[in-house]
Amino acid sequence: MRPIGTLMLAVISAPLIAVPAVAADCPMPPDLGDGWTVAAPEQEGLDSTLICGIGPRLEALKEAQAHGVVILRHGRLIYEHYFVSFDAGTKHDIRSISKSVTSLLVGIALDRGLIADLDAPVFSFFPEYGELRSPEKDRITLRHLLTMSSGLAWDETSTYWQMSTARRSDQFVLAQPLAAHPGEVFNYNTGTANLLGVILRKVSGKPLDAFAKETLFDPLGIEDWDWDYDGGFDAAAGSGLRLRPRDLAKIGQLVLARGNWHGRQIVSSSWIEESTTPHLLFDRSDGATPHGGATSYGYLWWLGRSPPEHPERDLIAGAGVGGQRVVILPRLDAVVVTTAGLYGHPSPGLTVLTTLNEFVYPAAVAP
Image 1: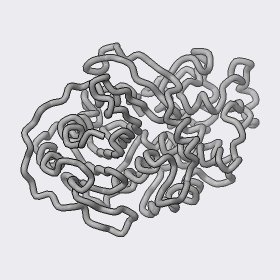
Image 2 (image 1 turned 90 degrees about the vertical axis):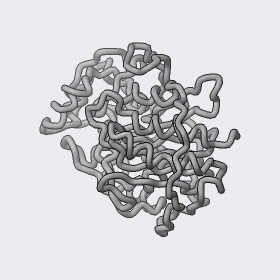
Image 3 (image 1 turned 180 degrees about the vertical axis):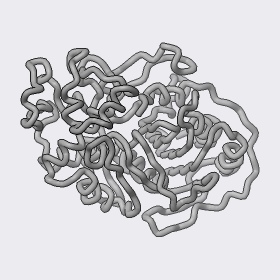
């Protein structure tokens, strides 16, 4: 799993590209009986001509390699479009958005008293690996796993693949030497995200996917999903979840509605608040994005700050390699989901960037 933090900044810092509206046959999304109320874009304050131009634009923009786009506003499904062989029933590998789903599961475990304290030492959950402990490693907490700041030495390309072939993957992750003091340095690490899945299994007595089904997917009406057993873990908390884009949009709407779905509080609003609050700031002025700048990280969620002239563009996002995105726009009361095949592409945010900057932002009525 490659780090994808730099990709979120491109969404908020790229200039608005003016494009002519495209007339298109753009019916309302069908009512599939999957929990969504459907509506036309204009019913929810979005310019239909612009929104309906998304499909033709991405069809023409072959380099975007779009697979699907789903848009919600005010809790209603107002647009969906699929490309090539994908359709509304196709499950898509959402890659590292799995981490953001794991964040919700940690919140549910905390709400239920299965986890008492985010500042609990990680090694307290792994007594079987006592030989790997040290005074410095004993300082690593659950909070550090959630913020990618464990301090463990990790390269998301080479070390990740070593983990995937290790006989005991959790042991492999915990055996890595410390390269920084816990809590001080952000270093994207799928291995430590995977440890959270093992911890959830230990505290709940159920595999991660079974816990997710009971506490999150069933309450959301998500029935068709898979979670790969990757890298020697159960369901790997850092990757491998496959969802229909409509169901991924439910994850986004749950966060937008502060943990509530159709009147049911699935995860506490306090967890949504805490997990989507910046906990680590880091500079991205390293040329990795078009304009550099700063962004931040919550608990396995990417957080984007708007430029002053566009305060409505604050965002919360789950992001996966290849262009998988769920973008939550609190000030616009909207959610945008994109799936794509941009693996190894120099601009893996191209699909969502085009959708947001050319269509969603200009189509939205100012709040």
